[in-house]
Image 1 (spheres, one colour):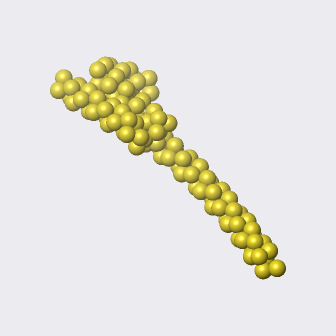
Image 2 (cartoon, rainbow, N blue to C red; image 1 turned 135 degrees about the vertical axis):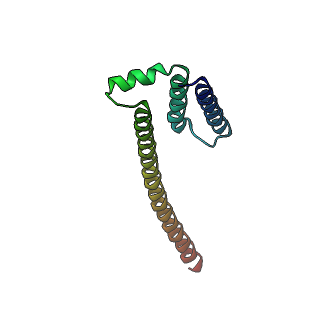
Image 3 (cartoon, rainbow, N blue to C red; image 1 turned 90 degrees about the horizontal axis):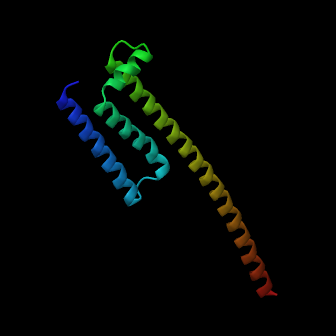
Length: 123
C-alpha cells in the first residue's frame, strides 16, 4: 500500500468520524446506531495506519487477495447494518400498531362519555 493511499484512507476515516459525531451532536443519529459506524471508522484508521493487519487477517482466513478480504468485510458490515435497521423498523411498526390501537380505544371511550353526557343533559 502506498503512502498516498494510506493518507487518503486516514483522511477518509477522520472525515467519517467527524460526520458521525456531527450527526450525533445535532441529534440526527442515535448513539445506538452510530456505534456500528464508529467501529467502521476505527477499523479503517487501523487498516490505514497499520496495513499489515489486513495481510495478517488475509492469511488467517486463507483469502488470496487483500482486496477480497476488504470486500468480504464490507459485505458483512452492510449485512449487519441491514439487520439492525430491519430490527428497528420491526420494533417501530409494532409500537405504531400498539399506539393506533390505544388511540382507537381512547376515542371509543371519549365517544361513550360524550354520549352519556348528552343523554344526561336531555333528561
